[in-house]
Image (cartoon, rainbow, N blue to C red; front, side, top):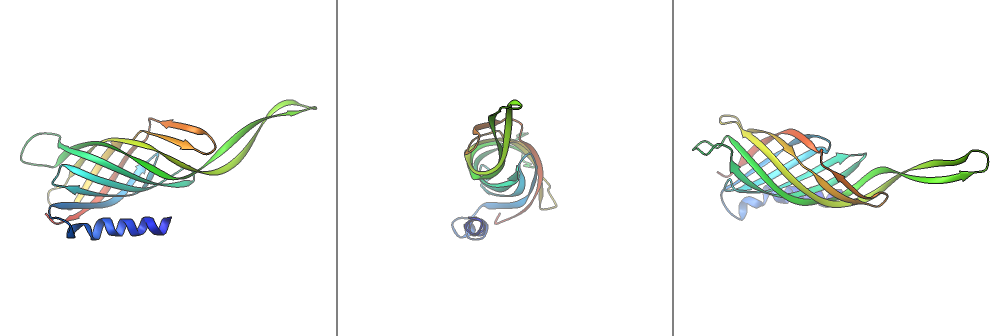
Length: 173
C-alpha cells in the first residue's frame, strides 16, 4: 500500500507537466490533528488536487481532496488565496474496544483492548494560503473536518482538525 502510494505521488508531481501547461506543484508538511506530508497540483490558479500521507492515532491515512481556489482580495496580486473542497481518505488507526464484563467478585467492569483497524471516510477542507512573491514557498492554515467509518468504533466525526503548514512551490508557469 505504501509502495503504490509513493508511486502515485511520483506520477502526480513529475509526469503531470507532460499533460498540459499551467500547473503549479507544491510539496510540504502539515501539522495539526492530522499531521503529515502534503502535496498539491494547482491548475490555472483555480482548481487543485491535493494529497496527503497523514498520521494520527498511531496509524496512517492517504487523503485526496479536490479544491477550488479564489483570491482573498480581488486584485492583480495572487499572494493571498482561499480554497475549499472535499474528498476522502483510507488507511488505518489504533483504537480501543471497550467491552462490559461481569465478575462474581467485583460486579460489572469495563475491559479495554487495543486494536488496529482500517478506516475510510469523507473529508471537507476550508483554508487560506499565502504565496511569497520572491521565494517559492507557501504558508497555509486550514480546517479539515471529516467523517470516517472505523472497524472498531463504527462512525467517528471530527470537526476539530485544524492545521498549519508550509509547502515548497515548483511548476511550469
